[in-house]
Length: 320
Image (cartoon, rainbow, N blue to C red; front, side):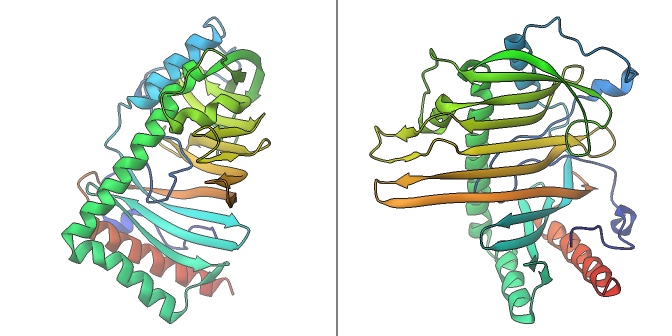
C-alpha cells in the first residue's frame, strides 16, 4: 500500500527540483520534529571510515544541533509525500503537498483499501472548501502555525531540559540519518534544575532515553524517549501522562542531501481533567518524497495530490 505509484515521477508535474517538509496538517504535528538541511555537506567529502567527532561536549553538541534545526538554510523547500499511520483502530494512508499557503492533504486509503465512492466524494469536498472559502484557509493556516510554534518550543527546550552523556556510535540506516554514516549516540536524563515555562514543555521533565546525531551535519537522526515517571499538568487537575509512555521520532536523508521526518512511534496513556482516560498509540511513516516548487499555491498542491492519487490507484489495480 505504501509503494510509490508506478509511472509516477516528478517530471510528470514539470516542476523544479525543490525539497523540504515542514509540519503537516496533523493534530500533533506531530508528534513533532521540524525537519531541515545543512547545505554545507555538498562542499566537503567525508568517508565512512572517518571517526565520529566527539571533541564537542554532549551538552554543547545538542545546543549546536538544535540551533541548526531551528534555523534551516533551506526553510522554503517543499515536498509532496506519502504518510501511513497505523493505530488501534486500523490504518490510514494520506498524501500531502507543502505549498506556499498551507499544507494540502488527502486520505487515499483506509485499512489498506482505496476509498469508496462516497468516501472519496467526502474527502474531495473537505479539501475543496479550503480553495473555495478563504476564511477556512485562514483557519487552517493558523492551526498549522500553532502546531509549528508548539513543536519549536519543544525543540528549543532540548539543550536545557536534559543532561546528556556519550553512549556510543550507531550506523545510519534507511529513514535514520544517512545510510552508512556514523551517528553519535547520546543518552539523556531529565535535568533536575530545568523549570518548564509552560505545560507544553512539562512532558520533558519525566522523560529519559537517547538521541542519535550526525555530528558533521549537526542533524538529529532520532529521538527515543520514555516517561520514567507520571507527569502531571496543572498540579494533576488538568491531567497526567502515565509512566512508561514512549515516543520515537526519526528523520533522515531522503535524497539530494535533504533530511525529512521519516517516522513517529508513540504510545501514551493517562487522564484529562481527572476523569477522561486517554490512550494514544500509533506508528507513522513518511515516504515517497517528491520536490514541489516553492511558489506552488494550495489549489495547485491539491491538483498535484489528485494526479498522484490517480497514479497510485492505477498502481494498486495493476498489482491485484
